[in-house]
Image: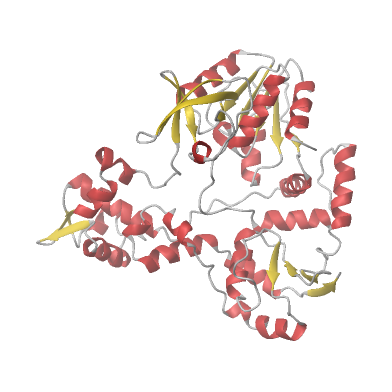
Length: 466
């Protein structure tokens, strides 16, 4: 455990002469770790979604041909791409799901006589606790179910528009037949089609639907390419060294105030910005000695951890050990985490804690989506301005037991979906092609975990004072 620099030193020292695949769960961490490994004279390659296709291909081909080397990657190398026989998988902190861990450890042990293996390197206490909780679930044989995102109304809008573009015209009563009446592409979507016509995304004439002027305006660029992709990504600038594309960077790095030259970190190397073409979203660079920064803004909707994952982390704090070998340092840190969490966890259920400063927190250990649902349901008790959290909810400072009982006695019967911010709504592609209430309901359903929230509300709560 420790800094990224310490993780690089451990990776450089361990398993020399072997091929090691290191997973990180952010592009910025991939870049930082890759740069530090190269500074330690480790043959290092990088792979993540913001590197150019050619850059990734060169790295993956070189890695496949090398022997004593490391490739640092995000989930881009979780499955599919063949990078040759691997000796080791190393995970920095922990992936969000058991399913992702199984994919990653499955990259090893493919040669006869070899074993599957994965080394976790936790950078901090939170990373250690997450890894321990994940490995506890894995040891129990539990893995996340494959569940499609609920209520894909925006995909209905996209598909009806794409069908009209493909066939040039489609009957306003016959379009459900293209999906054999399969929900949600059935007559229940008439309200969405009506909205598309009303807002000019579709034109209607003599019982036929056609692509309308609003669809051409919003999605018509590059031969309607914007209509064909069902997700949206934050804007990025293409980074070029001469005519060679290196990858893409976040515009925030190009607009932030800096002292001296503007330096980027990309493909594990530092670059000095020489020219920015704001109109064409291009950034020209030349090699620099060091000091570059990497940054990519995350999407508008944070994901957080699941109910089962966070409950497993709570079990670890209550004394459950994952059935894997832990270093002495990890065991010492885990013991310290348990000591620090004595007020926040109890084997009997959630705890409401008032600290010495008067702040009241409900330690639900329910996960991001369940806590978002609970905040919406108990809006009279919870601070609605707080950021959603995996483990706890901040409550009003004047809370007492009587107020708690009055607010929660029938809460399981009136669970509410979380509020949706304007930023999150803007991040849902094709949300403008839906009636606003349906776009909001779609996002709210995806942000909620009603079942887990109800389970938490049924648990007895203990009150504690620090």
